[in-house]
Length: 191
Image (cartoon, rainbow, N blue to C red):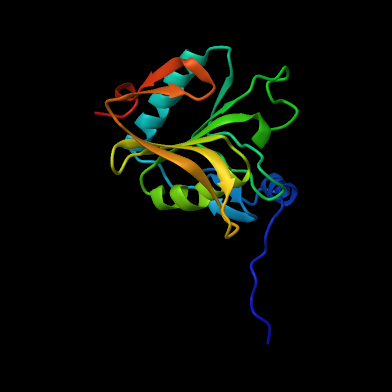
């Protein structure tokens, strides 16, 4: 008797399933390390924080970079997450020819409440392995921002970030890659 194994999907297979109507139109999915993950429903606190964050970053960055909200990024042949917000380098075609690759991404942000453990472990490792230079988690459980930078590979083989900084909801942070731009977190976290 052989052990059961899960089917892992490539991005091409994942896209083909979507084209064939495999996914319900109301549900959102993302591909993480070959697994199709149904994304959690968003509560009002999450939605408000995410909308405020996207709006503030979009107005701050203007035409300096592309701010993407809940859109796919390609990290490998088997991972296409849809982070809450991603800041990508400008590209002449605005990514019409393909979703941004890891090398195009300056910052990835997840807004987390029910997915906090997953975002701290699985997504953090995935983003670090892909070389995403900065990863932020807007932690709605503890009402704080967790900033991760300097991805590296551990001697045990896993991936992580060397630097972690916790910033309180009433503080101001500098946007990575744009030292002249700062984000007031009190304008992002719902009161």
